[in-house]
Image (tube, rainbow, N blue to C red; front, side):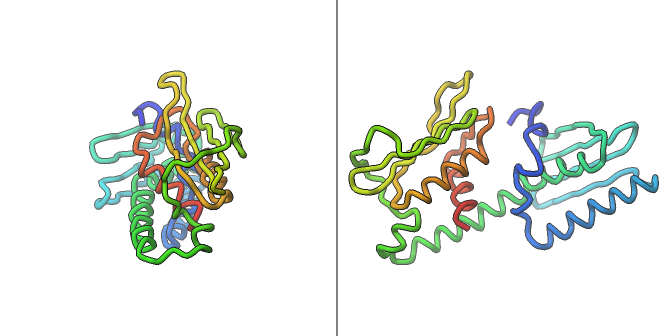
Length: 223
């Protein structure tokens, strides 16, 4: 993600606050209220958050506006806000992006690895992503069609009663880039994944790490 636009891409919903642990949610709520109180009584000067294990930190300082600086490893981003709550929200979004999301993906990787050790019966095959990715004949007209500004997703019904989910990223700079081409036994799961891609990646930047992109969407819609 480019240095100029990274902080602009973040929001309260990206990455969503629902990925916080219980303790992180409590910290977020307490610190947000403390910041507001400090601004209202005129005592606020600076707020810092550092996570050494992730090589991440952010700092909010007050002058005529509230200046935010986010640092991750050797990269840094800066942006000014009119309100401390705005600066705090984007700072915490960066925290989720660099600290919480990698942790959640690691936890999801363990869950997926454990799941593969269980036998798959007919019922679970209909409910989860266990279909073999062998090509089968499909109907040419899509059963479902999801289209965002950049993400286009189509669900095709196959002759063997499975469903093919195809997702591409379309932009004026790179044209059409494939993100997913996978078969599922359950059309509802295919629909959830299609919507998940739209919610998480319908933006101008092309998500390069497709395997991690899929894990992120899969974990979000199934756990």
